[in-house]
Length: 539
Image 1 (cartoon, rainbow, N blue to C red):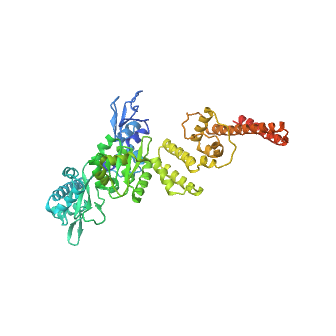
Image 2: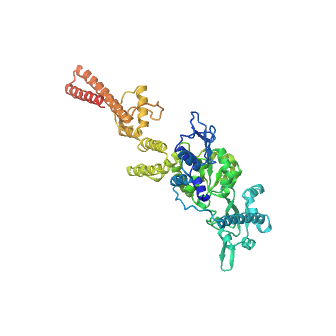
Image 3: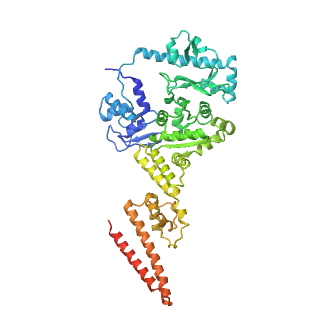
């Protein structure tokens, strides 16, 4: 039997959420930290089938079945391993590789990389506490890092000389360069990181796969990261995730900030569920990894233009990952500060206030549309509507996408067209009020079918109804709803005509010559009666 490449199956597990895979076959409901449903492997009426998205496995407490996404497809569809991973690869958008045993040389090479990285971290950490690293130690302590924090995150110092190239002189040069720690120049090997405060970068399993070096002399860029290697890909790695993973599970959310120091300070000051991307904008792989841990995310960025742009990109990327249980929010640190500064000046209480005041995704996207387009003009509103539709079309959950579409239809009608306020300036005859049943029915129609509300906006404005009030759910389709509004409009018009005729009749009895006017009103009343009869007879 051939051995299969674990790299590819691991990537499938990283790309795909077990809740999504199982949810295609088993209706799931979230209760606590897990999702529950009726087991597909034995008959049961009470759900005992548990799915843990964070750990990526399922377990049935009734029959004992247990496994991951691959075993679930194999068992539920009665297919072999290769067929199962082929189906999962299609779901993940990955190309199936040619399977072959992993060469022993590759296994040895990767193990060598891990050993080099770990040894380099030990060297850097030792140098931080020696004379050569005194200025780096002073800097990191000045940023609020205790010795315990430095030890926990294995922070160190890379000196100006070639310490790594010299220490690993007996290591195969190709392996050393493959880690990104050293490069080859005209005079031999030289260190890539020089005079930098060093932050090890860990994979999800807690192994060091790269480093991030921070400038200490104020030069730009502030951070340089290991270039992509066999073990490390910036777009697939989240700083601090190995430390935050359990906290994300407990807090039922993750917090995403912009920098490594911000992430560490947040983790050490009451927000252990915090992570950060690595010198690059958020990617689909980052969001996929976070959503596998938990679909509730708070993006916490600087309030400047760059932070707003980063938040808009995050909003765009997260759309396909939304589910009905998702809670995605956007918080901004204003006043030229970052989370690190907020924690220093205001403590965890000030930071908690910023997180608590985060804007929900629906509101954030609405704010982007209003800020980016001139919604006071028809053309601007059209552009904004197209923009919103383009974003919501990315939501893969059909029911959730429909809810977002309805939400924005109502906002567009109530806020952009502003028919209620505009109608107040239009001269009109006062209409009598409506009873409670009619009021509730109209409120339901306006909120359920915004397109009907917009079509009859001028008339609805005359009813003096608070359309933001709550109303009971009514079983009424769109066609019946429109018939109801038209009928109500005709009835109101009829009441106005009858009132007008009553006034004219009083004038006639007083000797006024209004016979022709009464005849005109009678003709209009007859016309309304005919229209009502036609409306009632319509199916």
